[in-house]
Length: 218
Image (tube, rainbow, N blue to C red; front, side, top):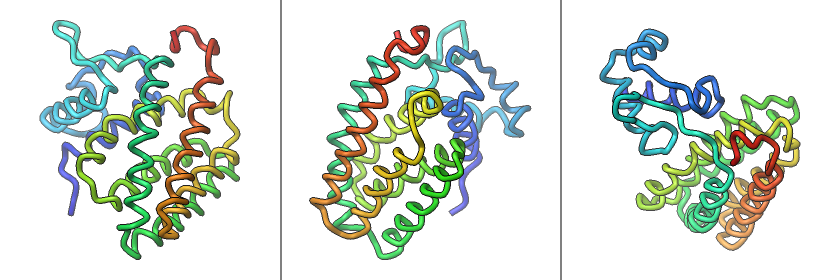
C-alpha cells in the first residue's frame, strides 16, 4: 500500500528531527516546511500532529511548533517503560513472526553489521527504525505497537545526539543483532533475554552522557 502524503511528510520530518537536521528548540513553520519538502499544508499539519503525539514537537499557542528538548531524566524513564514492552514484543514476535519476517530480521542484522563496520552512523540510525518496527509488526499486538510508537522516535533521537562521543557502533550492533537473530530463531526465552541485553546497553549508554551536555540533559 502506498503511503499517504501525510505519512510521507511524517517520515521525512521524523528523520530530520531524529538526526537533528531540525534540532531541539527549533521553531517550525508549516509553510516553510511545506516549501522545503514539497508538501502542501495539510500533509505537513497531519505530520506535525503525529509528531506531537510522539513527543518530538510541541504545538504551543502563539508560539507555533517547537522541537522538544532532549532530557536525560525523561529518557531514563522512557527506557524503563521500553524494557517491559520490548520484552513482551520480543517474546510474541518469536512466536508469531512469519517466515518472511524472520528472514527480513536476518537480513536486517547483516545490514546493521555492515553499517557499524563502515562507521556509518546515519545508516545505523535508519536501520534502527526498522529494528524497532519489524519485531513490533511481527508481534501482532496493536496495544504494544501504539505504546512503543510513542517511544521509539525519542529513543532514536537520543541515540543520534550522543553516539559519536559515547558509543562504539560495532558494540551497539552486536547487542541489536543478537535480539533480531534470537527472535528469528523462534525461541521466546532467548528473544526476551536478548531484548533485556539491548535495554541494559541503552541504559548504560544513556547514563554515560550524564554531564556531557548540561544544556540538553539537565
